[in-house]
Length: 432
Image 1 (cartoon, rainbow, N blue to C red):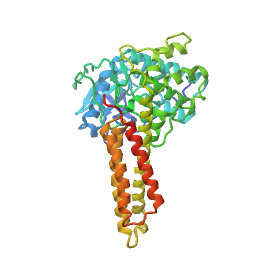
Image 2: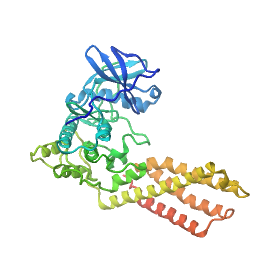
Image 3: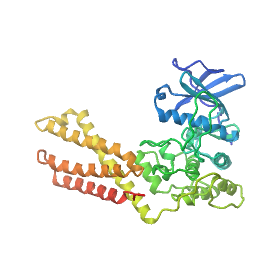
Image 4: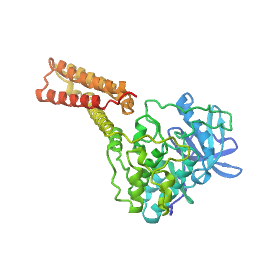
């Protein structure tokens, strides 16, 4: 693959940055993310990349555990498909990871700077990245956050990085060579917040259940489509809208040549069981017949295809939560308008109008708090969203006694809230 300007962009060290980490002198910043800062270090054997946990995350147990899990999983991954693991250490109480320095931009940076990939460049990216994914799955690991920012395009081809939210398929975490151990177990439970990059997550990742290698195949196809178009395949709008598209829509694959569009379409299936494995896709790209669907080594059995009724319920839930989000966002915007333009609350009815806006904004906040676990199928959260939307209509009717509310507006709001409640009630998942 031709990589224009292959060196990774580097910024200077900041005053608060350490000058050394272990045996390595730090010469600059390669980037920073949610987990930590990545530095370029110089040591006895040449340049290395060093990822240091953010100081602000020292007391964040889940974030620290995800970082430590990455330290534990990386030695299991073949060096040709990721930045080769070199070691670990601690700077005070902050753990850090030392890996091979890959002198190249991320796939997103490359496409943003030089445009979509075409022809043999796109073919090489597809084959190299699916080879890396097959090796990762062969090592018994699910990446869970494959996206254009987590693929570095070096002079010798793509490397998959950032295993911070990866999981071992065998349910164990190997010991770390260093001062901070990770206890074996089934892995960390996710909290109410989504872990990963929503625009590049598979449908099953929003359900809160088991996530296997098939999720990585969905993300691989979405990433390949980004490389061919320069655009996120499910859009880049509000998170709720993106999630709806991932769950209910199929992206346009016309930018991919036929030999890539076919495996990408199979990998983007909403049905987990019908997606191929990384090895099957690789063999297909190489022209070798392979089973279209199989389980990756050490992977748990894929769940059976959902019955049609369950799919309808899922779509109803997504639509109901989407409408609830739009209503809640409108209420927050209404309060913001009163704050930004004091003239709107002038006159005798002004304070009352502000009170109306505040009461609706409070309901909006409750809605937003409940929507995150509701996306993942939490029944109590879904009922909370439905109840709050119904309470909103009751509040509209109560305020209409004191504030003039046009009947058509009240009827429209009541109809919308009723629709949201019906969709949510229908979409509540069955108890297992």
